[in-house]
Image (cartoon, rainbow, N blue to C red; front, side):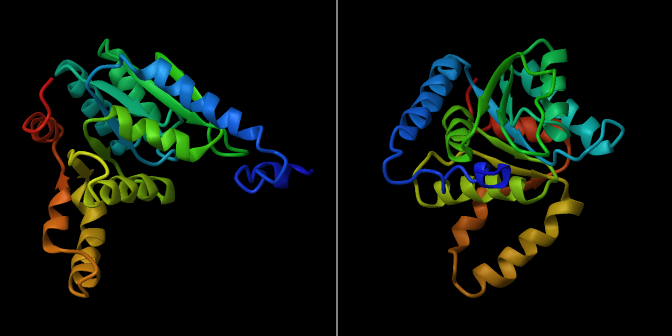
Length: 219
C-alpha cells in the first residue's frame, strides 16, 4: 500500500480487518480517560495558517486568556495558527490548555503550548471529544476544517443531540457574508426554521464573548 492509500483511514476498514475497530475504541478510551476531569471548557477553532503577527492570532490569545481567568479550560485542535494562539493564551494565563492533534500527512503539527495533549488518527473521534467536553464553541476565521466544526456543532444543536451551548463566530467582517447566505438561501427556501438562526452569534470583542458564554454556562 502506498502513502497516498494509507491516509484514507476510513476506506482502509475492509472485510476481515475489523481488528481496526479496536484502534478506534482505543482512541475513544484515551480521550475519555484524559479529559474526564478537565472541568468547564470552551473549544476554540480557526485556521492553522494564521501567523503569530496576524491580528487574529493576537485576538485568539486574548480570548483564551480571558476564558482561563474566568474559570474555563481551553480546548483546541492542537496545531498551529489559531489553535497555537489559543493554547498559548490559555497556558500563559496559567490555565488548562488542551490540544487534540490530528495526524495529517502535510499540514498539522502539534504546537508546544498545550499542557494536555492527545493525538488522533480519526477525525470523527476527535470531533466527539470537542463536543463532549466543551460548553461553548468559539469560531475564529478559518477554512474547510473550521466550517466542518462549525456546522457539526450547529447540526447537533439543531437536532437536539447535544445541549444548546453558545456557538460564537468571532469577526463580523469575516462571518457576516456566511450568515447573510444562510438567511437568504437556507431560511428563505425553508431549509431551516427561523429559530435555528438563534444558534449562531457574531461577536467581535473578547470581553463580550466571555460575557455571552457566562450568561449560559455556570463555572
